[in-house]
Length: 489
Image 1: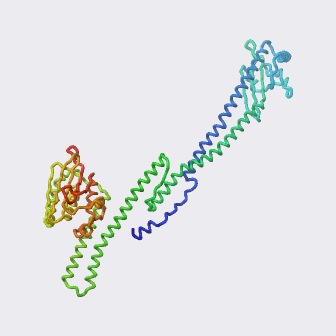
Image 2: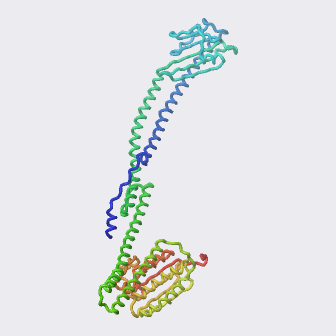
Image 3: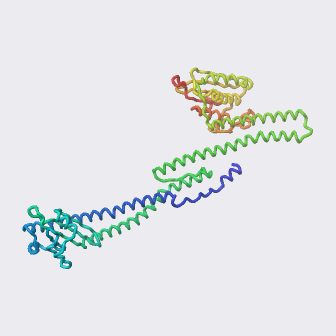
C-alpha cells in the first residue's frame, strides 16, 4: 500500500450532520404507537361509560313509564278527573319513593302534585312531556345534568277512547350519578396509568426497533469512507437481520474488489515502473557519456525499443482487462472452436519451430459455440503461446478440441518445466508469474492467463489448470457450453 492509500485508510470518518428530531424514525415510531394508545384510551373512556349510562337511563325510563301506566289505569276508572277523585286514587296507591307525581286534566291543569317543596297544584303544566301525553303519546326521557340523573315519563289517562288527562312522573337521582362519576374517575385513573406505562414501553420499543437501523446506517457511513472491512452485527431473524446479512455480503465483495484493485494498481505500477526505469537508465547512459561508440548506442537504442515494446504489450493487456471488467455487450455468433484452434496453431507454427517445440492438434467436429471469434482466438492464442514459450527445446505441445456432453473443451498440454502445486491456485491472478526472470525474458506480462480466463467466463465458460497427466508439464482446459442445433440464431 503506498503513502496515498495509507493516508486514505487513516483518514477519520467524517461526522454526518445530526438528523432533525422530528425527522427521526424513532420519533415517528413513538408517535405512531402513542397515537394508537391514545385512540384506545379514548374508546376505553367513552364506550363503557356510554354503555353503562344507556343501561341506567333505559332502566329508569322503563320503570317510570310502568309506574305512570299503573297510575293512569287506576285513574281511568272514573269518567272524569277531579281533584278529590285523583287524591283518593293516589292515596290508595303505594307511595312512589323519590319520584314526583303530577296529574293533570285534559286541559293541562294540575289536579295533583306529590311535591311538598314546590307544589304547583292549580297551575297549568307547561311541560313538553305532558303536552305529548295529552296528545295520546307515551313519552319518557332521561338526562345527566349537574351531577344528577333526571328522568321524566308521561302517559295519557284514557277512558273509552277519550283523553281525560295525563300522568307525569319526575325522578331526581344523585346516587346513581355518583356511581357513574366514580366509574368515570376510575377509568381516567386507569387510563393515566396505562398512558404512563405505554409511553415508557413505546420509548423502549422504538429505541429497540431503531437500534439496528442506527447500526446499519453507521456501518454504511464507515464503508462509504473506505472502511470495507467493517461488518454490522444484527441479532434476530427479521427483515433488518436479513438486510444486515446482505450488507455484510456486499461489503465482503467490496473489500475483495478493493483489495484486488489496490493489488492491481500496485502490480501495474510496478510492472510499468520497471521498463520505464530501464529506458531512463539507458537514455541517461547515452546522454551522459560523450565518448560512447555508435555500436553501444545502437545496442542501447535496441534495448530501449524492447522496453518500449514491453510497455506497449502491458498497456494493451491492461486495456483488454479494462474492457473485460466493463463487460460490454458482445455480438455473439456461432463459432466453430476447432476452426479457431487450427487457425491459432497455424499462426504459432513458426514460433514453435523457432523454439524447437513440436505442435500437434487433434480436432473433433461439431464443437460450435455462441461467442465471438476474436474472443475465442485470444483464449486459444494465450494458452498455446504460453505452452510454446515456456516449454523446453525438443518439447511437445498437444492441442485437442473435443466434445463431452453439453460442453466443448480446448485442451492444451505441454512438456515444459511445469507449475509448482503451491503456485497453481495463483496463476490466473493478474501480474502473477511463477518464474519472473524467465517470464520477462519471454516477453510475458503476467496478464495473459487472467485475460484468457475472464474472456472464457464472459461467454459462460472457464479455464482449469493442472499437471500434465502424461508426464512432465502443464495441462490447461478451457470449457464452453456447446451450441446445439436448435439454439442457433
